[in-house]
Image (cartoon, rainbow, N blue to C red; front, side, top):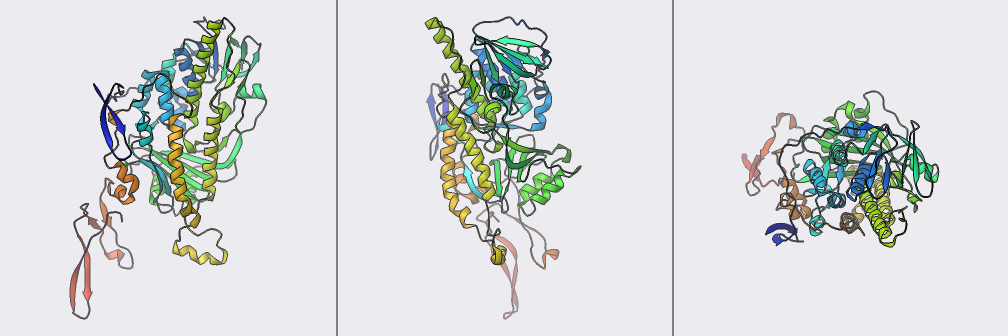
Length: 546
């Protein structure tokens, strides 16, 4: 009999179940070395079923190749350059894999999913959410733990993009991935498809899957040129050698500001990943070694947490890119060619669902192809190749959510300090903006519904997967209290508290160390009574949320 963790609204219960939780291993992780071979032969011996050509060896292309291979299809991955697997991922930073993507991976290949989850850093059992960028106070907390556990899904993780690609490529196999094979076009003959490479070579298959990213050549050949849409934001990203004092209780933060926001997340090993978004025209260029200086200017006046992360980052490792996406389309394919991932629905990174949607695409397309193959065998008719996925509505909704989140950030204002005109003097009183205060309840309510729907996979049923959770991922016993009580969350910080002097006498005063015992009074100074000519010791109960 195996114990499985189930999380209720007000308590965490251990109950028995026939669902076997996948155990977590503490074994030392070793790097996975992946070799690739150059495509130098046209004739690739088929295995069975369909021969599927995949353009692109990124996350979407490799996950689909793995899913199709597990279904028994003959798969060939044609990749422009294996730089993504050799190391490009380390410069793009870690990626967040949420419950829906991890559940899809479990159905595709449980062993591979286990390796991915072992290599990742769990953040779904900690407090995550939105904060005000200036004060650093919580705006809305996200409960990513309860929905996942109630549905028996893995908890959200952060994993190195390079590590993820290495695991996937190793599972797909070096005999399947062909290097220096840049797909620049194709010809659909009705019963088969021929792919043309930049080097002049050609490959034939029964189906072409375009997983070649936002600048997809397959999409361009299929539907003609489509310009990516600039979303108004430039994004700086970096990884800081920094460990916040609340690392054990908080996973990731989204700090909001007017026309700018800042995202940070724990990526283990004493490092924090961050993204800084700023609304401005595209095409900007920083002066040499000027990224950090510009960031400190953009986020001047923000809370110390943001400033500390920027300062702790290596200037040379800070990257800058303009944010683009693609306008959603109802047609994902035609004939023997279909698209998945960023090639058809590239989206902003603020929902952390770009890679997750590509993984869902891969799972769903492999399932549909397998069903179509079985139907053709049973009926004795040619296979009806799926040219579009049945997930268009779900992807379109999540795509719209990502755009709306960016628009909301453009109008977010913490305090009355923008557009006051003759009432500008009110700025010094730090009056909370009425719109921000009024929207807080609605955002909190909507966030709970959104997380449950996104994590659950929408119409996806994750066939073949039994709902289960890992006991090793259990949240802290105070988790529910932290969700409701900001002070309780702040008191959980693993650090020392000091009362710092402020005012004219600050130069001659010493910081006072505060006890972590809430019931213990703290002597902070004395008060002189002029009439009685005596001094009194001033004892105060100082809350640790100062």
